[in-house]
Amino acid sequence: MKIGAETWLVLTRLARITERENHHLQRTAERLEAQAPDLAWVSSLEGNDERGEMLDAFVSRFGRLQDTLDDKLLPALLRATLEKTGTQLDNLLRAEKLGWIESVQAWMELRELRNRLIHEYMESSDDILDALLAALRGVEVLSKAQARMAAYLQSLEAMH
Image (cartoon, rainbow, N blue to C red; front, side):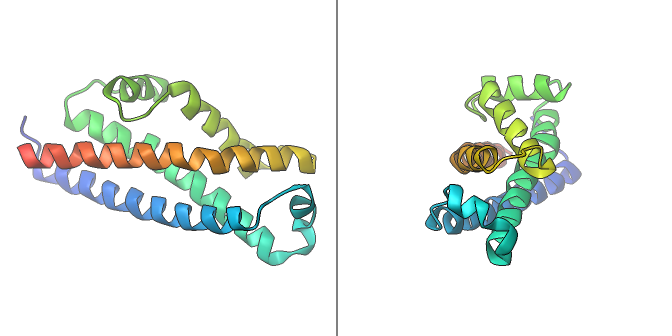
């Protein structure tokens, strides 16, 4: 399979971007986990700028990595390998079949968490805490997907 130079540039750029985004997300998640967030921690967010900014950074980085992976890198990888692209769900189903993501269902649940955290649909500290803890667990899902897509790109490069 012959992949054009412009496509390689796009793919390698997106791989570098997602690697950097993943690194920053991991660091922020580690700092957050070290805080051992609980209900008291969440309740203190309004009066604690440092904690609020840490949470904002985590939510932003979580959403950014997921967006870059499923809106940019995934479709670019699929197109480069002559796979049919379609809706986001179609692309995720194909990524699951290719082994790039573990589960479409888990990915969609992370998307919902991201939306809940970003748009602050939650009214209570309990809801925020539940979503935060689930998103912290979800960091591994995003990280593994990024690593798998990057590894696949490297295997293409080796064959190229």
